[in-house]
Structures are given as C-alpha cells and as structure tokens.
Amino acid sequence: MPKTSMKIADLIHWFEEWANPAWCESWDNCGWQIEPGVLPEEARVLVCLTPTLAVMQEAISLNANLIFAHHPLIFHPLKSLCTGEALTEMVRFSFTQKIGIYSAHTNFDQVKDGTADVLAQMLQLQAVSPIVPTQSGLGYGRVGMLEPSLTLQELLTTIQTRLHPPKLIFSPTADLQQKISRVAVLGGSGAGFISEVVKTKAQAYLTSDCKFHQFQESRDRELILIDAGHYATERPACDRLVQKFQTLNLDWVQLSQSDEDFRQFLP
Image 1: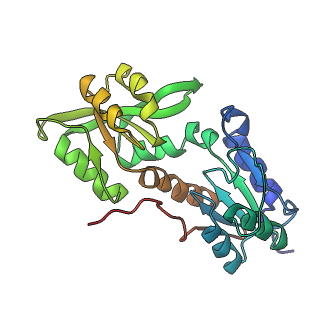
Image 2 (image 1 turned 180 degrees about the vertical axis):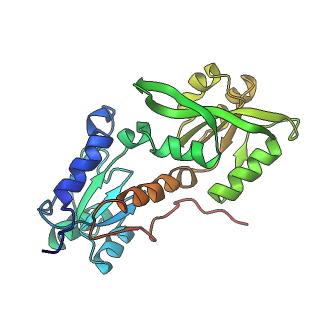
C-alpha cells in the first residue's frame, strides 16, 4: 500500500512537541487561530510570517489547507466582524475554503532553531546563549561571539547582504572601524530588551522596531543598536521552518510568496 501523507492533526502534534504553545506569553495568542475542521486532512501547508488576505488568496490558489504563520491572526479580543474587513474575509475564506490558520509566536521565538537562533546562525555567532533565559537552554534572543571579529562596517555589510533589509538603521557612532566581537540578536520588536542586552556585555544588538529614544538609550549605555526591520529579522525563520517541514511526510509545503513587509522606503 502507498504510504499516506502526514495529517494536519499529526503535524500540529509534532510541532507542539518541539515548540510548546504553553510557553506563549500571557499577552500573546499562539496555536489555532481558526480550525475549520481540517485536522483529519493530509497537510498541504503554506508557511508565512503574517497571515493576511493576500496570503489567504495565495493559499486558495495553491490548494493549501493550512496557513502556518508566525504572527497571530487574532491578537486582541474581537468586538465585531463586518463585511468587507480583511479579518472578516479571512474568517469567511477559512471556513468556506476549509483552510486552517495556526500561529506559532512567542513559543517559536524561544525554541531552538526559532527566530532568534536562525538570526544567530545567519551571522555565524559562536558560543550562543539566550539573552533572557526562560527554561533549559531556551529563551528570548541570542548572544554570541563573532569569530573572527568584524569591524562595525563589516558587520553592517554582513547584515545587509544576508537579511536584505530595505533600510538599516544604527546608533550614532564615531568609528565604523571599531572591532565587534560580541553580538546580540532578537528577531522582531526587541528594543524592550536593551537593559538585558547590556548585561550580556554585547557590543552590538540586532533587532527591529526601535524608537528614537531607544537609540539614544543604547548610545548612552555604549551599545550599538541596529534596526533591520521586523520582516527582515523574522522572515528567515519562516524559511527555516519550511525546511523542517520538508523533512516530514507532508503532502506539500511551501513558503508564502505573498508575505509583505508593511514598510516601504523611497530610494
């Protein structure tokens, strides 16, 4: 008899054994966003950073039955669902087209090979440990060593080349030729961890969504803050997740081509 492909229920069980949704922060919403009765179906998975209407339309065109997202679709309690709104259309398509939407957010941030580890690996950091440990060997962000060390200019060029951010913003510094050997990384909005990063003795911190005064705070605390944007710092982990899923017996899995970086910059 031909071997059957992995069912959605089994895929989710496999994933949750690896990145437990119980690790989800109290303010977060991990796990099923919409489950329209697809658990017994053979998994056809579209992986994305953010579940949007464009991604849903892509899933329909590709005959996918599961959108596996990093960001939650439902983040705040809903007060209404009205015709024509993007979220309403997502819900409608989910049920009419039988496409489930599942989110792995702060649990995926903490786990091995999640958002933080992938960033650290892209910069080839060595002797890596969490910025904020949460449990055995896991936690938020990673800090490690560049071997050999790089100048700040070389580090910025490396980030630009490997992450392809539309813009790269960094703290004011007098010397782009200073040597950098210890670097911290945290995908997504990580400026709230500046104090914890300073304690790790990192010289530079790669993250995103940093505000004006957070650059000032970092400069005053002798930490070079580097903002490569939310999309650029988390999208690589989605690609890595596709690679992990490809080692399983899935019917089909692909990285979304409709994922969006919601910021645009003039040249």
